Structure formats: C-alpha cells, structure tokens
Length: 121
Image 1 (tube, rainbow, N blue to C red):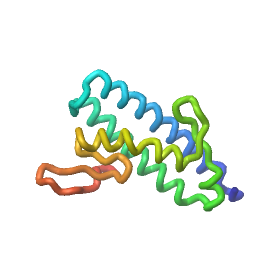
Image 2: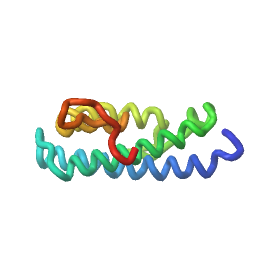
Image 3: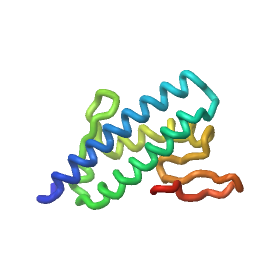
Image 4: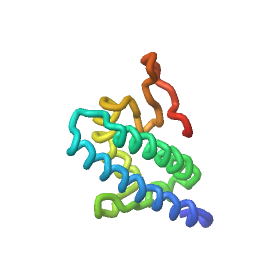
C-alpha cells in the first residue's frame, strides 16, 4: 500500500458504498417496474455512472498493490474492489438494454443511435 493512498482509499470506499446503495435502489425499481425504463431508473443509472467515473479515476491513482488489496462494502459483504465491479456487470447489462445508459463505461445511446459519453463524466 502506498504511503499517501489512505485518503484516496477512504474516498473510494465511500463512493463504492454510495454506488452500492444506488444499485440496491435500481434493483428495487426493476422489481417494481420490470422491463420498463422509468424516469427513476434513468436517473439512478445516470447518477451511478457519474459515481463510477469518479471512482475509477481515483482507483487508477492508486498503486497496483493498493488496488489489489482495496476492499469495499457491497451487499453486506466486504469484497475486493475489482470483484465489486464484476458483480455490477449483469445489472448494468439489464439497465443498458432498458435505458441506453452503460453505467460502467459512462456512455449512453443518443436519439441517433450513437454511443456518446454521459454528460458530466
């Protein structure tokens, strides 16, 4: 672990927690309105994409050993940061198919069918 990584690690853990809360809200919204791109789902997808963008910038500022040892809380478990991202993939695929937002790479499909960066990321 790098000597100066502590502040970034704590920030990443906080952002991951916020992403986890957003993911739980998205899962709830999908249960309540399956196969529907509700305004709530679109808003959550946009917000989570912004949080993921901030998180990835911070993670890449950490040393490789710090990245590998970074643990985050997700669904009442403490897991490796990269495992956390892997567990988001299935939900992200569902959300992208409904809303056009890819929350992992911060892109969306615009009205012309083009893949563009999500504003604010």
